[in-house]
Length: 177
Image (spheres, rainbow, N blue to C red):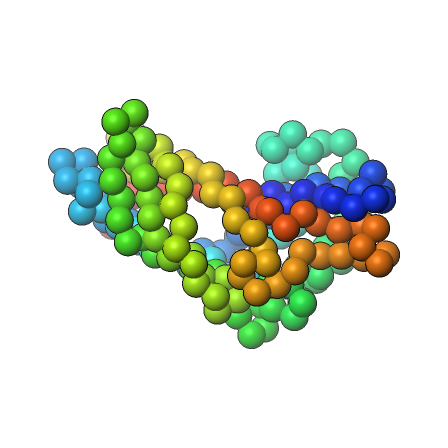
């Protein structure tokens, strides 16, 4: 997930990249009947880590890596009651409702995304392919934090803040049990 800086003092801040370390889910996929497919994923909010140097480089954010203390402060703010409220809402979940193959070979995934106990229907294109016995899915979904009941992080009377819009990058790998 990418969160972008904003505000009049944005040059003093960082764009952020957040990675989930603990998640679970299930995928049902039949290449012969892709419309019968389904995806369910649950991410543990407590497992979210911010701005790991290797992840920042993967997303082209190598310059100005936050210090270990700054990363810890960012993670604490992200999981606080004013943001993701990890103590009250320990997970983020997604459950597909439909998956439809598109003429360009991608799939249109529709489902319910739940953050902080607020659920919204979302739609996004995804690339899905079988690689040996491994199912690979890649997608990108953009959403607004405020639509899930919390305002983007803000400090210094709003001079340093995050944009409301967040980009969620999905890189799914699943194998048969």
